[in-house]
Image 1 (tube, helix red, strand yellow):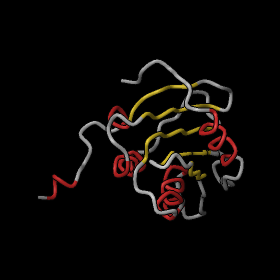
Image 2: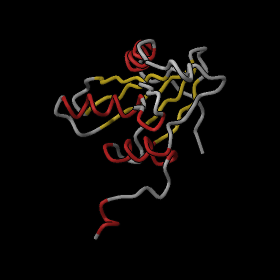
Image 3: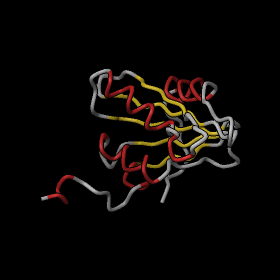
Image 4: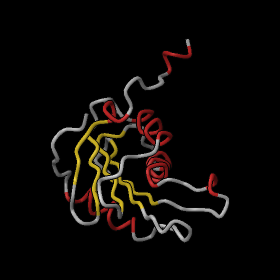
Length: 137
């Protein structure tokens, strides 16, 4: 599945690392930061925001995507997700589908830990058989 680790541009991982510190995770203590690069080259970041009613929280990846769309962009060219976990942590299933909505299958995704371990993959590797608009016809 995932390829050997590689580094995404420092500005992308730095943005994810920085926004992770702003995460609101009083219940789990599990802070996540995500950064996506739009087709323009601009970087959009998001962090997880928990809610006492657990299903009502927001994932970091969803926050980064929302910031990108709010800025008028709809194409992701690169993704970086960082968490305070022992191993690089992949996005949840819902966020994999959200990433697939705005990224091509070959779009690189770098998963990282705050301790520096990384795992490089792609959107297609994270979500094989993704649901697409063609399925609706």
